Image (cartoon, rainbow, N blue to C red; front, side, top):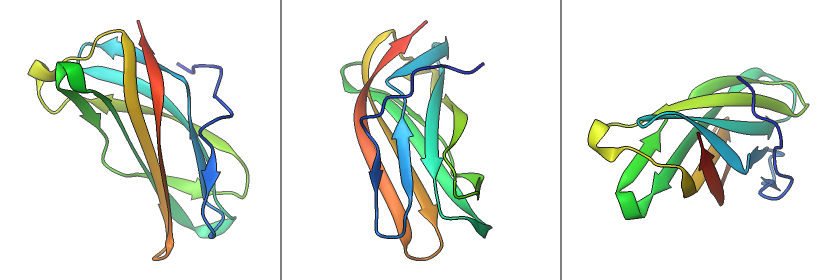
Length: 122
């Protein structure tokens, strides 16, 4: 499942050339799972980069995190749908506003992270 409409806002870059964007909408797959499209770019390299993401709704004390996912560095924008799970079923998310983050790491010096507001949809 691919969600369209990656928001142009939320894109940043560090001096190493790493960039990533978080889509403005995330799909609730279940109360304890959410699909978050993350678009990234890193300089072409044989070494992979690592993406990590999370979605939080503090008012519900809900948090979804993902262990780092290995992704290729092609020198082009690439999109990956990151499926995030709740560490505890008691922390179920609901449709509505949420805070999201995504970070990318490439090599010992390259790191970029960003937070933004997103909308969780059924």
